[in-house]
Image 1 (cartoon, one colour):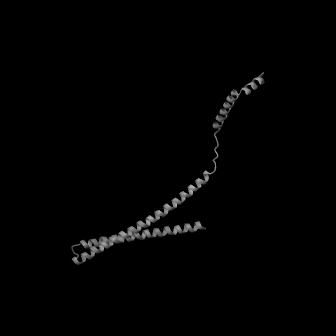
Image 2 (tube, one colour):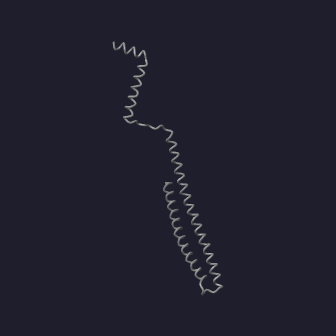
Image 3 (cartoon, rainbow, N blue to C red):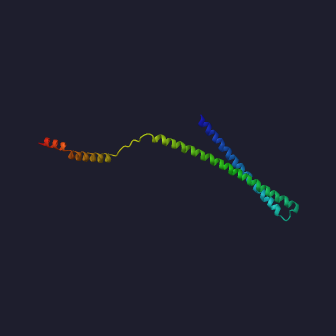
Length: 146
């Protein structure tokens, strides 16, 4: 039940972020149009000198406003990236904990048949060599053979 609530919450959060981004895009486009219009009137030869100052001031204010919108967008984008990074860190921490738990148990290794045969042959050779080094074993073999 908690997972469903978390999923619904993240879906709502994502939809709100998507709506904010679309609205912000519309606002930026509108402000950009207003900036272009104010620049056009400020540079026009038909605009009276008294109004030219007002249009120039308006253009500056609109540029500042657009800059603030872009800053807020970058802060929100950074917040989204930070949340994603925190989620990845939590997942990696859980993975490390799983690995540390699994390291405490010995691993079972199944040897290949070729390795088993090679080990048996090596054991047989070492047992023959140890029998040859043992003088009692050698006299027992001699007495058995006679």
